[in-house]
Amino acid sequence: MCRYGLATYKPHYACFNCRKTFKRRLFRDIKTGESGFEAKCPQCGELTADMGLDFESPKKDDLKKWKHIKSLYSVGITFHSCGCSGPGYIPNSKEKLIEYFDEIKKTYLKNMDFWRTRIEPSTKKEKEQDSNRNWSKLGQISSSYKKETVTNQEGLDYWHQKVKQIEEKINLVK
Image (cartoon, rainbow, N blue to C red):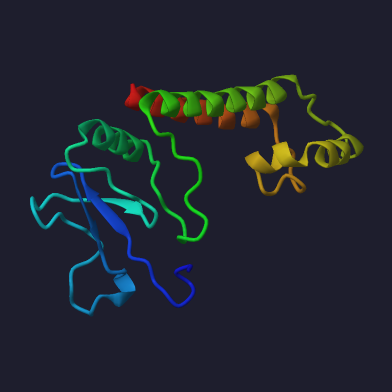
């Protein structure tokens, strides 16, 4: 049952030092006066990672899986969802994670190709046609694309930044 129903799931936190997980009460359930959002490991006192509602921890002695979970967390992949349908695809190995990011990078590069080849509209009619034809691409760059023209340089800058971010994630994993 979803946390919005009768049952409330508690977030799962992981301590990568101790290789242990803990559930923590929701902040709204904590009495006034108790400490804020920091979740510290009861064993070692270090900050723990908020892994989400659907996280299932590996066995304590499975060092390879713990290392992989830590690398997932370091690049922003966690197990957050409402508990009903799961968190989506989570790569189960370093190789699969790199493949996953490589596919995302390919998509970003294809988007850059669009902005390299797009002919910017110069008249009101061309702008309207561009808006009708390319609304999804324009909307990714600016929510006000109907009011103002999105330039090719803005699109290239946006996707260049996304490629840079995904490459940083790939480098963190390697």
